[in-house]
Amino acid sequence: MDMSRRFLSGRMAEVFGDFPLPWNELASPFRGRRSADFDFFIRLTGIRPAATASLELLSEDGRQRLEAYSQGVNRYIENRGKRLPWEFRLLRYDPDPWRPEDSLTIGKGLAFLLSTALYTRLNMIAIALKLDGQAEKLRALCPFSPEDGLARVRRAGVEGG
Image (tube, rainbow, N blue to C red):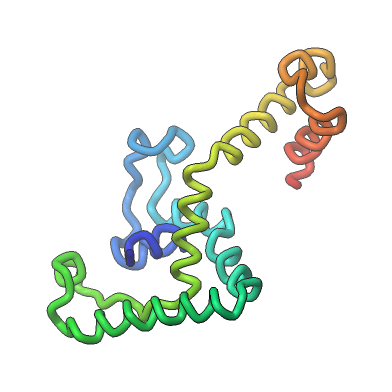
């Protein structure tokens, strides 16, 4: 749980240090990058801020359930003392207290990682940029998109929006 929270919050280098990424295990855009760069990329996705903002939108019952869960996790950590699982002893650190937004971070992060929307959007931006000024070709590739959908993709790619 702690590693998932760290990964999806862009905080892995705090524990593992800043090391060269095995880009061939990830993707070629990470070639020559370091773990702190990957943390930065994860932070740019906004998973953690979205989770924190979602906390405010929960019902009182939902917040209470997340608080109770967090209290249970923290009680376990406290009761274990120095007998935490081996990864904490090996890496020589203690986990931060668990908070309700940590559970939401993991949920939102898994939804993000399992979604193809990001990859689809990035691919469409790249294609729209490549076919700039060739609306017919672009329309042929995406015949079922809304009339203004391709223009929005093209603007997002050019204007960064």
